[in-house]
Image (cartoon, rainbow, N blue to C red; front, side):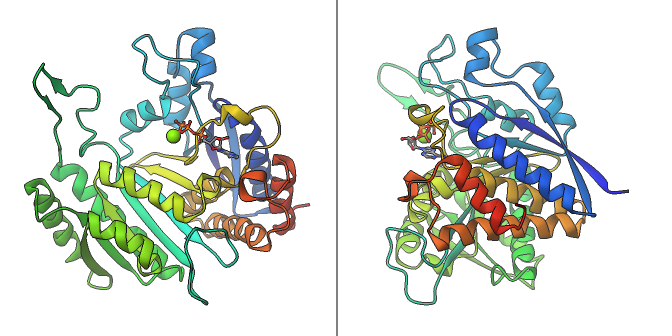
Length: 363
Ligand code: ATP
Ligand code: MG
């Protein structure tokens, strides 16, 4: 009997359904070929279009599907034309993050041979690091609840022991997995501003305490400003970076920039029990419905999902398929023959996904 894993699928808005369909099709084929695991998929309606129709952006039934699933695959949600009554954007992904306490925002940054990047990368080097952004507190803690008077405005920077300890434990475990799978040297860099803010000195103290528990892994610190500089000058020297919410927000866009844009940037939001996997880009309403969307960031997010499930459940077949799927995408990008328009090619969504399936020998 193969172990079955339930995946909640939020196909979302705009290009969401177009990139979700081929991604789920590839996952189904991988699972069908594997004797190590099975996958079943449940659609969870949510998002801006759903809100426009029903007045609910994240129905309780969809939340329930998310809670009981083994992992959550999400494309993109939100449309510029649809807003909550208070004028803010429809963002059920933020509600999911809060409800499921997904404290670790994981943003891998990879640039392989031949991949377009604004940097000049020395011969023989590739970029492959992971940025972990704390996603529940930090400078986003008072988001929407800051105090504003006529003369001043205040927001709170909150760093808690509870979340920080979980975050750093996760960071070191990820560095160990990367070391064991040959992806990184096994180093974690704490990115902060401990020279100026007491909150970051506190953050760093907890980082050092966790680091002491992992003598087999390296640990160092960097100030956030210097990190921005080093991400541009020598990005290949990073392995795992872990930082506060706002710093992570900014640095992850810099990371996407290094990758030549959002089209190849996957992400995961991970907690102790649950995890959401989604591309970094939005719903791209300007190209929705035309079959032009690049599905690769979504497919890379699905690959991260298989790797995460494989590690969590000690399922070697699923971990191996996640790696295989990521490498198939990287091979298609390096080859450069079949690319969507955002990557400089002229292929459509279906051709791009078919190229990945072909690289996997699925078709
Ligand atoms: P959000 O606020 O949800 O992040 P956004 O308005 O910032 O959304 P996106 O929806 O990511 O931005 O779109 C930004 C630009 O990138 C658009 O021109 C869009 O067409 C393009 N884009 C985003 N995702 C893709 C994709 N998968 N394939 C091709 N183009 C994309
Ligand atoms: Mg955006």
